Image (cartoon, rainbow over all chains, first blue to last red; front, top):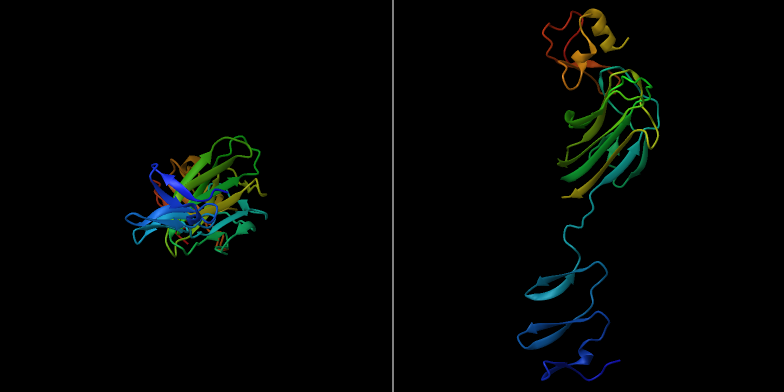
Length: 194
Length: 56
């Protein structure tokens, strides 16, 4: 282990015992006054408080709600009717904000919302539309046309305030059951920043 | 019989294109709340046929 003085510019020196622990850093606590900054905790970032460097937890690290659900029950859609899709099984729901096939995060922020709906129809003329509805109003829809067992995915980053909610609707041109299972029809969302 | 089928029966001139989400003038909706489907939008050139209404 090194002992004695740490030379600086070949003239000045700092006592090596100033640095007591692996990861310690030197800084000037005032002009011409070296000081030790002890190693921070895992995940800490270096910031400045009162004019000197300190380790601190990253700002904005508060986790927002996230959920993942999929259709496990039977749902038959009439032709050409925008129908709210029900998702009976949760993969996870971090803050219990997903209920009745509706996500109401209650924490304002920007959320990535993803909906996937498939049709069980083998018709080659089947068109499947899938939409995100925010507070009961269509926000965005995408579609897949003229495909048997068509399956469409819709995704958007949406700002949701404390009482906004989102749901997934679908519209099949040919009446059929909704494709169920984790890879058939799903509804996912996660807060990405406040 | 679904609302879509009932409307086609009441107005045989209607086609699936009239209900198309991109280019259609009629929109049907079902909120899966047990109340059934209803007409959400009706911009078709003829009025809503008798026996039907706009909204829930």
